[in-house]
Image 1: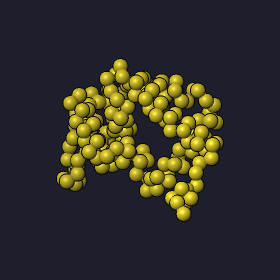
Image 2: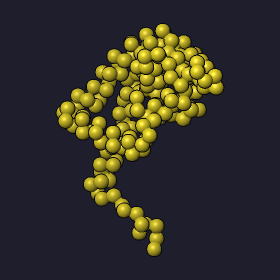
Image 3: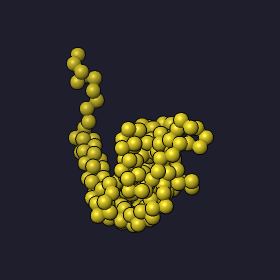
Image 4: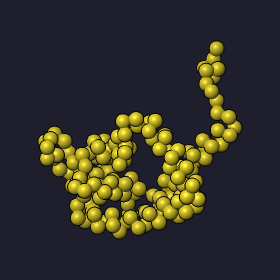
Length: 159
């Protein structure tokens, strides 16, 4: 018996859907990233400062933030250095745990989020929300919620 005998191959319909999901996701991320280009920021950088801005204290542990934005700690550290060079974030020791490091959104970082959010939200609308019915958009959200819950059963990526 070969390995291929144990695989439940995708049907033609499943293959079309899978490729549409994969390519659609990649194209959407590229479009969102390109829309932010004039702001001089990448989507991954915006996601970080956006997550920080939504936290009442404007700070998060690096490990927690890495899980939320689905980045390795190493990648987050490199991205944080770029944001720190802009003056948008600062790295500080955790108040309750001196071993931990928190990323803190600065006032100029908050101002950047306020300015860049308009561009980002418009791009999300133009490239996703407004090209389908509310029911279709909800269905995509529900389906991706199932995927997220399957791949992250502990809810580490929940924001």
